[in-house]
Image (cartoon, rainbow, N blue to C red; front, side):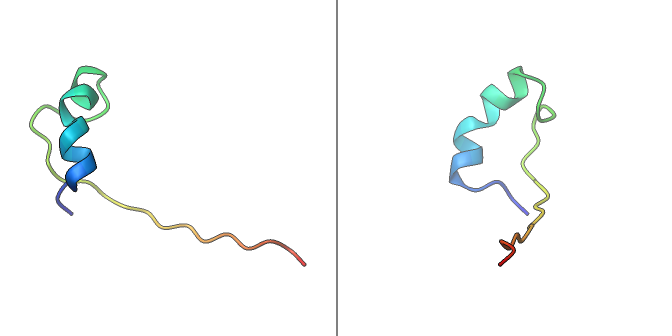
Length: 38
């Protein structure tokens, strides 16, 4: 999905740290659900 406002604002910093590719504007999301044992 396209970067949202937070990722767009941080994209340059993430590029400089090598966490995203230069010019990258898409991301994959993984949703994990956790439940506490009762």
